[in-house]
Image (cartoon, rainbow, N blue to C red; front, side):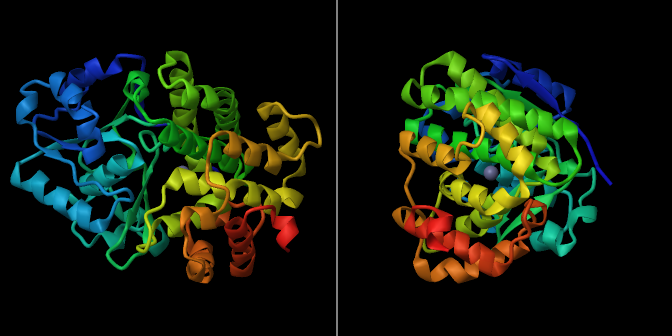
Amino acid sequence: MSLITYLTTIRFAPGALAELGDDLQELNIRKPLIIADVGLERAGLIDRLRNVLPNGSDVPTFTGTPTNPTEGAVLAALDLYRSRGCDGLIAIGGGSPIDLAKGVALLSTHSGPLEGYAAILGGIPKITAAVAPLIALPTTAGTGSEVGRAALITLEDGRKLGFISPHLIPQRAICDPELTLGLPPALTAATGMDAITHCVETFLSPRFNPPAEAIALDGLERAVKNIERAVTHGDDAAARHEMMMAALEGGLTFQKGLGAVHALSHPLGGLKQVSLHHGTLNAVLLPYVIEFNEKNCGPKYDVLRQRVGIGPGANLADFFRNLNARLDMPESLAAMGVPRVTLPSIAESATKDHSSATNPRPASASDYLAILEAAYEGGSLHAST
Ligand SMILES: [Zn+2]
């Protein structure tokens, strides 16, 4: 069965932040908790948010979101939510604060532990409409979490698991491209490559969902045309506008399922030895997964070539490799600091990730290990197998 749903309400415009008060009223949120991180505080974005809220200076704020959200941080934010008598959440930031807020919205109304709600452990039907209301304000153009039904959270034991339900989609997304104008070039590149990977992987997913495919291709085209401009000229409002729409479109297409890039980047992002950025991981892995999937994706690769503007038969993996190089992305997993010794267990975890089932070519642990080893060294998958 194809389950096709586009559910949430999105405000998309430069300056849309100013309409946050209307959303709070419509959702009947009187005592919101802001979920953010210290980087946002330093960048002055929390002050900008407070300035548009009634009694903004009194609104409690949790800034302890880690780079990859953890169960511990969800519980700490939940404590603050309960102790301040909150009745809804405002998440501002990249994917991490938004995913963390989804975890708080869930546990504020559903009894713990968090693990019981993980998709891979049969938790999807346990998540009900009782989830607390959440308004998401992305400040990066990448994750799409503002319109997505998933939250990725690392449990205390190190497993990075997906929590998936239509009830976890924020009730409102406020997409204000002005909030991304100050995003540094490296983060613009990494988050933008995450958006590109969402569009590519969902387009290639074998599930039948033509609306999602059309959205994914539109997002891919916008992102490929604008990512370099957004990185080199961060104050270009038009490029930021297009990147934010591409990220939103990537998020809308998640429902079709991701693939091997995300099946690998999820466990890599859960490593305790090193903190790795989700978008950078996806950028590095994407060319290798494109090579791995090629024999199962012939006609679809022709469509991708056309959308990214390369000729028929041109090497699609090399297109993304070259784009990575122009964006100053690391050349390999080794360059990112991934410990080589972790690769076999990452490959094993990838087979259990919820994104693995929708990769267009079934991948075993040894397939994942081959992809990881090639991406560890740099070069190409075919050169190393
Ligand atoms: Zn992603």
